[in-house]
Image (tube, rainbow, N blue to C red; front, side, top):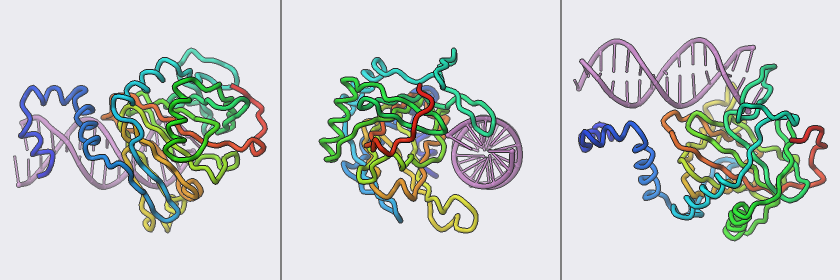
Length: 258
DNA sequence: GCTAGAGCAGAGGT
DNA sequence: AACCTCTGCTCTAG
């Protein structure tokens, strides 16, 4: 009797029409911003995160626009650039387009690896340095690398995964900055993914707002998988920046560069 | 307030 | 770490 019915009655015919286009996103965002708390501790068994708003709307909008101009995303693997604007990935013997766009920036010579692909970091841009320094100021941690995922709309997503611990400094949290569309973000404990123990540990669901910072502290990444699921109602893009500290001598040896 | 169809979200197999 | 298929839930028009 819910919320939806009440909302429907309040709305005029004009508003109802707008609701079908971009309005829901704007209203949703406004609601979220009002309700947002400054700092939120998120805890569960082996999960330790801090959520806060790092940038207000105005600054977030500015940074988003700057990044849209500055960033160069990977469009292919093994040095082959495809006509399609998204990179391809081999999964179960089939080739798929990566359902998002990715870029890596950081200190000279650093590399990030996943699914057998090795991505060489591009040099920091002014905007990325600005965001990185803001995160350092807020957290007290320094970072030498950032992985950027751009989700064009609610169809773009990333499946459940953990970040590769072998090349990360475990003492340094992973700092995730969100700009643009609000998206759901889900943590699931590794033991809750199969069979009997499935019901014991519930997933932890968050909404990541425009300008927000999510700090994933140790040992979160050891026990919990995370994902950004499909949300078809979302029509706007989101840029996510995950700042990390990579330990050089633990890096896998690169065979392929992009 | 109820019902049925459409569309979406989540889980498992590949 | 991707898609496809199946199932069950929610939304919404009538």
